Each structure stands twice: as C-alpha cells, then as structure tokens.
Length: 254
Image (cartoon, rainbow, N blue to C red):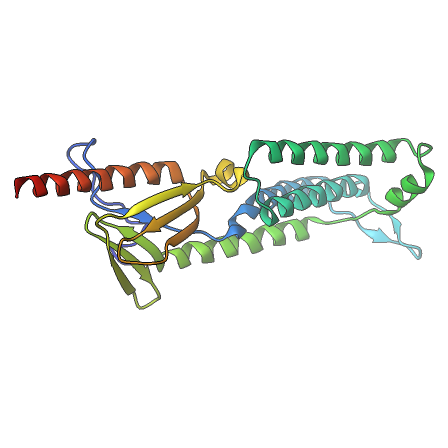
C-alpha cells in the first residue's frame, strides 16, 4: 500500500482551523449495505450453536430435536430481515416519508404473519399455507453467510486502496489500477454538489453522492455512496473556499 492511499491519513496541521492540504474520496459499492443481514446471520448462528442444530430424521422427515422449533423461528426471522435488507439495497428512499411507508408496510406484513400463525381459524387457507412453510437453517448456513460477506467486504476494502480520488487545492487526482494509474484534472473553480438519495445509506454510513464539476471537463464526476459525506463536504468547502479567497486576493494584488 503506497503512502498516498486513502487509508494513510495526512499529518494534522498546526492550526486545526486551517484548511486541509488534501481530501480523499472513496466510492463504495452498494453491497456494503448488506452488513445488517450479515450481523443477523452471526447472531443467529451463535444462538443455534447454543441451542443445538436441528436434525431431520425418520422415514417421513419427522423433526427430532429440541431446537427444531427455535430453528424454524430463527429461520423465519432471518428471511424477514434478509428481505428487508434486499428492499433497502434494491430501492432508494430519498425522503423520510418513504421510510415511514416502508416501516408501516413491514410492520403490517409481520403482524399479519404472526396473526395467521397464531389464529388458524381466522383464514384457514392462508393459515394452512403459512404453517406448511417451515424453513430450517442450521448454524453452518448462518456462519457461511457471514463468512461470505466478510470476505467480500475485505475484497472491497482492498479494492478501494487502488481506486480513489484525491483533491488538492490546485488539482484533482484519480488513482486507479494496481499499477497506480493516475488521471489529473485542474482543481481551480471546482464546484462540488452533495446529494443524499437514500435515507438508509445515510443512516448506516452517513453516506451520499458527491458530484464534482471540474472547470475543464464537460461532464461531471459522480461518486456514489461516499461515507461520512457531511464531513467530507465540510473539508472540501474549507479547502476550496480558502483557495478561492487566495485566488481573488492574488488578483487584487495584481
């Protein structure tokens, strides 16, 4: 890993109020938003180890284990959590209203499921269908699920060390590739826009979209899913604001 990687923090300036000398920007893939379901898998796998994995035995597949019912309940909960996680990753929720609607729909769906599970006479057809669905997942599945996502996250963390943006007062640098390929853009008159298109991404990682508008480029540079976007925007504003003041002051001196 070279010294200019995003993981290497620049030395703190003597004046904490002074603008930063450089700002690193990293765009992460949406798959990192699956970490809630990975945490559920780790917790449920640990619970199954404590209770004991269910064993399906007998000629007719009769469940024969004290942890069978617990395994069914945990499997239902995991499928429910995984479905919600898929919805969060698959769709954007730009406003609080959409989040409220999602929570209401989710609560109604979970309430209806529990209602039909506990009161079979309410709608016998629906209740019988739900009672016939008995997924059973053991601890091995949960731990493998968690391990797969941890492995993917580690690959993502390695990848972003070779694909990131570095903004300096006078230039914009794009580091990419294992051979440290570099693209340079002039930074004077650089405009930066911030967008928060997904409330959940902002809640999980304080992430959002940054749009860079170099004066020399006709197309904007869009960086999605940038973590701690408010902090990054504050540093960029400080740097670019100081640059603009210095630039105007130098013009006045002329």
